[in-house]
Image (cartoon, rainbow, N blue to C red; front, side, top):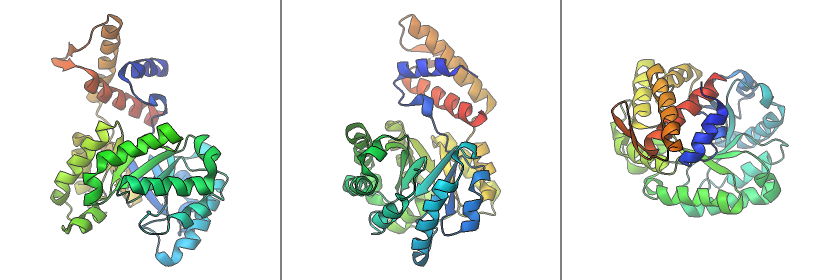
Length: 324
């Protein structure tokens, strides 16, 4: 593996933001905060990103209990010895009318999650509401003096069409106001299908256009793109096939709804050995050409420029974090 200082040095050449703090999210696993037994198991869960869930996985009648249990869990869970790479917390959406109740309850915990996760962000105007609610209950100091990241969901036709403006506005909130840094975006396929009136299927052709547009928008802003849930938890072959497809398209991870899906997904989103070797050798070659003041160059028959370098750096950072 390449030295971390070397990776940081090359990343500066390439203009990569926060390369040293890359958080892998090959599998994003939900844990309903209303289920105390599941909350107690979080420290041993192996998924890259484990998400304490207040939204879809929690019945409306159990929201208050879930909020209270989530706040306790944040302070109780030993962050230093977690099996996962990230502990996230997904709140309810602006449109649900439940977001402020969530944040008011969660802000009572002394600890913040590694990432706040907000579903159904449909417009830049939603972001203003989200920002104002967090500021009211957490205060500017707690928000700006933390490494907590932000993950948002795109789940409607309107949001998909307005995605560049949504992502740009979210990144500007971090840059100009110190709000949590947007790090990844998740495609909510079930709500998207409901919104456009399509029928959900295991092969996923009904979301083909949406998924490809989604991942393109994410990568235009150098953000992780998390793919949709595979709905048949017993069909691990289908899950493997769709995960491999997602990685080939440029997705960096996938949502999972059952622990049995985690190992399949994480294996598929780990680049093969030959791809890792390609990335390491490319970065070395780029470093040599950069020191000579050269731009694009040939490597293994390909013309190499900044976009391909970014692909190589993403691979190296992922492997580095997963193997540590």
